[in-house]
Length: 89
Image (tube, rainbow, N blue to C red):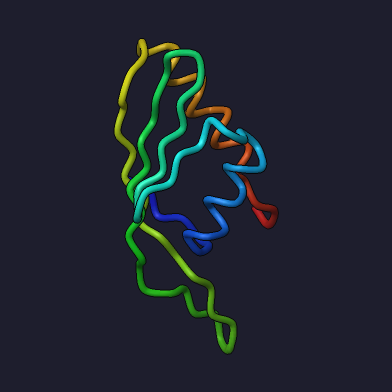
């Protein structure tokens, strides 16, 4: 499980930009399937992060493996992590 800063819509849009038709969205579930590897992301809104007057949306992201070898899954997850990284450290 991961805690992600940003809205579900932002996460989905980023995945669709990076992976196109490999992304399937149904309710609060996003599946990315490429070359026999499938990762399923379940998104649940979390309390926003508040920094003074600034408020940032957050999501709890649970990741499940739909298909693929351990190495192939790790490779796809690394690609997804790079695609969804944000600046700021």
